[in-house]
Length: 351
Image 1 (cartoon, rainbow, N blue to C red):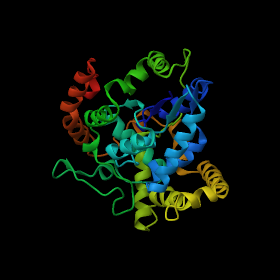
Image 2: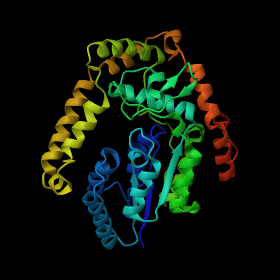
Image 3: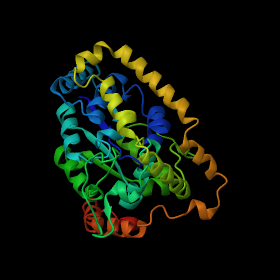
Image 4: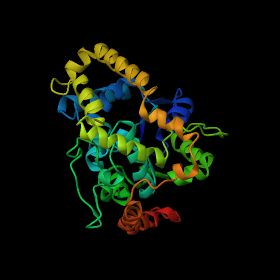
């Protein structure tokens, strides 16, 4: 019987590091197949670009059935942050239903991070795609009402948003446990990973039945920019908004990728043109990689090397204290309940 283990992120919880430095090196063996490209070519459009029509789902199920029939006794190990949510809709229940429909009962690996740090890190990630807006606007924070106002996925300026109230890790853990069973849901905390990486890697190795050696040094994969540089980006964002050219993830990637995947034509069209699609994606990635060499974001990262401490630690948003206080109070009760359910000592940042 085959085992299936799926690492679903979350985003901004060391996923890129784990995928590039750990999983691909130590968890891709004769007994473990890690992220086979054939299924990822189908799953990523489903999970990240809403290609959830029945022909896409059925093709993924067929691939898994064929793989299971020819890989008796092997473990299928998949890892992608997009498995947990449509960026950054936090539609956890819908994503879990898709995974369960395709793969049945599986093991889940989930990394969590305290909501204050996680939301801020997610915000900084959106700046890379050109979604230049304040942290308050990204969260839908109303200073007058001292609350987060629910927004559409893309706001009136076509920029990404997120609902901080949906960053409920207790709710997410219950969805996973109800679908896959308590014993099949393995929850890690980003804070513990930072504190003692090798201890957490040892736990991962035990779950996956693979030997992960002690790692001497962790290379930072996704390097962000300082608070001061973010403030500079806001000036650029205001300028781009004035001239109505403030285009981010929606126009730069989301619509383009849906067209590439043949969203309206179906998976047969996509697979029939996959070589062309692959080449288009490759050309697109190379163009973006080249442009990023000269991007504003890259330039600001360079500036940060020589910036003063005052510049680096400048307030990221005028409402930051009120925002952090509201985030913490909104999730404190459920965070404590989560740690109690897991029967582990609460991490201070969560409570």
